[in-house]
Structure formats: structure tokens, C-alpha cells
Amino acid sequence: MMTKLLEVDKLTKQFGGSSAKALQDVSFSLGEGRCTALLGPNGAGKTTTIRMLTGLLAPTSGSIRFQDVQQGADHRALIGYLPQTPAFHGWMSGLEFAQYAAELCGMGRREAAQRSAELLERVGIGAAGKRRIAGYSGGMKQRLGLAQALIHRPKLLILDEPVSALDPIGRRDVMELLGELKQETSILFSTHVLHDAEELCDDVLIMESGRIVLQGPLSRIRAENREPVLLLEIENEAGSDSREALSRWLKAIVEPTADQSSIIRYELDPLNSCAAKLIVRDINEARRLVLEQLLEWNLPVTKLEIGYSTLEDLFMKVVIHK
Ligand SMILES: Nc1ncnc2c1ncn2[C@@H]1O[C@H](COP(=O)(O)OP(=O)(O)OP(=O)(O)O)[C@@H](O)[C@H]1O
Ligand SMILES: [Mg+2]
Image 1 (cartoon, protein in one colour):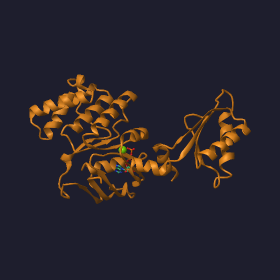
Image 2 (image 1 turned 30 degrees about the vertical axis):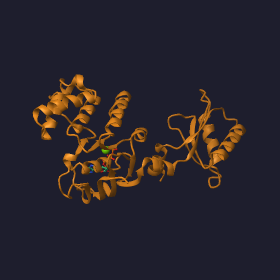
Image 3 (image 1 turned 90 degrees about the vertical axis):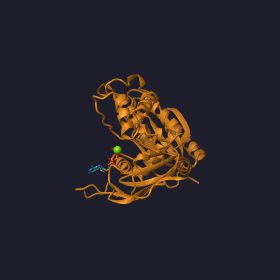
Image 4 (image 1 turned 90 degrees about the horizontal axis):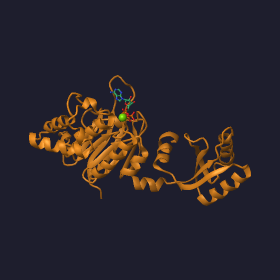
């Protein structure tokens, strides 16, 4: 049985001057020691939710309750927060900033200095600790923000898109760091990178237009929504009309028989004009049909792969296709 760290009940937010609700009846709980990914397209309400959890924004209605903290009491000491776009005093050095954050949390000078140095090292900017923040790259600032969020050993680490500003190497590093951190503390992080969420989280919350559209343990969500898929690629020769041929073929085999067909739907790969994903009902039946029809249409196949739908596919399904 999962111990709840925090429970959110019917959280609603209406910004002054706006008629629409940015958040409506959002309810979920975060488990102690769990890592939760908060997903949703731009404007879904992720940052608004996060800012209310951190106490920076007051809800219009609804409640947020921390385990062992009386309702209405201050729970900010339990939270470490990395905002979506963290702001720093550029004239400070990284080390000074971390120390300043530590002292604001009530740490003594010596402990603050020690903890700051240790954390800067841990997030990979130890060597730049004495340099002014104004000269840091985006990725270095992100790491400094992470050090700041961790300074008081929070019970819950809340990160708003922690990797979106990073290059692929920085992203890898921060993901690895989060993988270590999740052994020590509970984490809630928002992201657009579904692959990262899949790799790291235990639980997912998917939001859309201010509401939660799907939530639960990743393993359960995966098992319940896993659909077999066929990945198909055809030859891409300059001057050929492969994409068009592929499109016509897909329409011909999927659409007329949508109800009975073993192929449920298809998506053309937006990045590769000669690739498509077919979401199928029965893999064997679909494979037979596809192979048969590919031959009949004489399409120059280069790849046919069998797999399962990913979190990204599910995201597209609940958020876009609905
Ligand atoms: N201060 C504000 N005043 C008015 N409306 C706001 C304010 N902050 C957010 N909103 C609105 O609330 C909705 C949710 O915004 P929010 O920033 O929470 O989305 P998000 O999921 O974090 O998006 P993104 O992925 O782009 O960061 C949007 O429609 C946004 O315009
Ligand atoms: Mg946001």
C-alpha cells in the first residue's frame, strides 16, 4: 500500500480577468518515495499546478494537504522547487547563490558553505562555483537551480521542465542525477519529453486544458493501454512519390474496413516521410494483411518491425485524438 505524501483535492484556478479556468477540479495524490511525471501540452496547466503546490499561487478553490502537516499550515520547508525559468542574481557566484539559499532556509554559515560546495559538485558545476552566474550557460544555470532546490534536503522535489533547456549531454546528466535522487526523495517533475518520463517515473499525471485526463502508476497505465504496432518504412528515392504511394496504400487498407480491420489506425511519421506506424488489433492477422497488401501494391519496403505503443502514443491518443 502506497503511503501518501500529499493529496490534492479539486484544485481549481481562475486567473483574475480571465473567464476561462486555467485549472479545473484537479485531484491526485503523490506517493512517498515515488517519482511522478506531470505531462501535458503547452498551456495544459502544469506550471499552474506546480506553483500552487509550492505555495506561490493561491488556488481559487480546492485543497492541498501534506501528510503530517495540518491543513493551512506552512509546508514550504518540505519542498524543493526548480522553476521552469529560474532567475538568479547574475553578480553572485554559483557558490554564493547556493549559500544564500541555504542561509535563507535557516542553515548556519559553516553548514551552508559545506552543503553548497557539496551540491555544486554533485550537479556538475563544482569547478565553476566561484564564477559569476551572469557568465553561466543555460545548462549551468539549470544545474545551479537544481542545487538550490536540493539545499535543505526536501521531502518533495518539484521540478518544472528540468531538462528542456539542456543539450542532449546535459539532459543525460540531469536525468542520471534525477535517477539517483529518486532513491532519496519524492519527485514531481513536468516534462514534454515523454521518453524521459517513461525512463524515470513510477507514476504519471497527464493534463489537458486544465484537467487531469489520465493518472496512475506507469506500469499499470502501460499494461492497460499497450497496443501492438507495426512500424513500416519504404524506400525513399529522390524524385519518387513514395510518400504519396504510402499514404494512398494506408488509406486503402485501413479506412474502408476500419470497423472490422485488424488495423485500428495509422499515423504517418512527421519526421520521416516514408515511415508510418500502424496500430493494430491482432499482430498476426495484421502482419499477414500488411505483407500481402505490400506485395500487391508493389511498395518498396525497407523495414517492417513489430513493437508496442509507447507512452508517447498514449499521450497522443488521450490528448490529441481523445
Ligand atoms: N498569471 C497568469 N494570468 C493569466 N493566465 C495565466 C497565468 N498563468 C497561466 N495562465 C493560463 O493558465 C493556463 C495554464 O498555463 P500553465 O503555464 O500552467 O501551462 P503549462 O502546462 O505549464 O504550459 P507549458 O507547457 O507551456 O509550460 C494557460 O491557459 C495560461 O494562459
Ligand atoms: Mg509550464
